[in-house]
Image 1: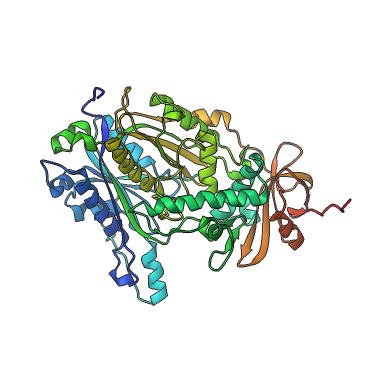
Image 2 (image 1 turned 90 degrees about the horizontal axis):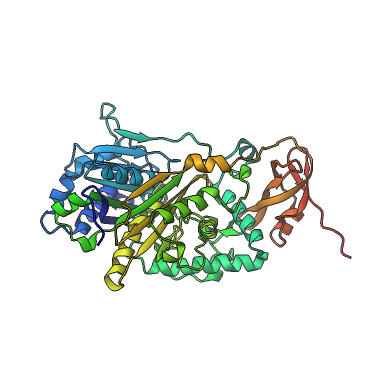
Length: 509
């Protein structure tokens, strides 16, 4: 084994908790779910000299990813429940990369500022759904106004979408990622139906992976046809995405990752065979809104983060033994796979995707990392040599990207973190937007939005002749129908006043 320093960060425990109670009064609230996951992580650490309670009492920081709840200081609630009331509390807002708290904890440990900390997230959206269905009221704990403020608060003011996209009415992530999907389809030279089959087969494979994941929200077999086609409750939402392509956020799920220094892990009596090393972590926080991205299907932040993470790990893409690509929608997985050149290397998920394993609002990447720790451990117990797992994360509409590598063996060069935001920003320049342009334009990405079986509206991002972009809409039923049957990416259409897309079927020869 490579030489370790006392401050080398190592993951010693991961924890998961979920519940499916139909009676919302039987369900835990979000912070209680986090407590359960952290206790599970402490048990998972399998200390030979310390009890789980002693390990929990030694936690120095608790970082929480913001969820669909309003606790001002959830880390404090969790700390008090666990018996480590002096732990530093952290909260990462929506828009901050989900991996950033984990990266920060590893950096603090490597710098000798911390010896043991936990990163967690918890969501009880299923509890809320069951409350609405049954009419039984549930409430979350209200922290008093004079409660201590969160110690470390990570915020983000970066835009989710451009003003032009918002004016066009493109508000939902499913619509924006469906636009990315169309651009990638065209780039890969796939026909409309061929592409729908490919994506459905990908997600049917994820369903099979979720069935083998003990922490998955759904463990059932779903065929490619049942994912692809708008049948029954599987409505078409934004072509080509049906409901089953979408992240499932109506879950009661939590996750926890317990990270310590090697020195602390030794003192806690955690068996070295149980350790998993964060090898390299790279992130880009350079945000370009979708309509302004040079290539809707490919992102410099992904490419450069992946290349840099592998280089820092002394590895190549051929060394990756497992991957979990962020899976809020198929375009997320497929764009990451394209930019990282992972299509033929290994399965693209170890969780089974956020559509089937569960997509808690703002900690899905932590679930991927925690499951990867389990996979690396399992593989190392049966296979000799280095196991190297890659997990990706994005924020917004591919506005920020992060890559993390995990291994059963420490990095020969030691743990490494890099923020390459400035490097990415130097080459990834946003295209100018025009809301007033009229005339010929070329479609670079589009989707058709449905309401049940009805085609409602098309959204299209288009190149203008002067090198800029515009965003167009259409409610013309003939155009909408054609867009679901023919490829419109790369096609010239007309931008009319009011940013209306116009197109006419050419006459038959």
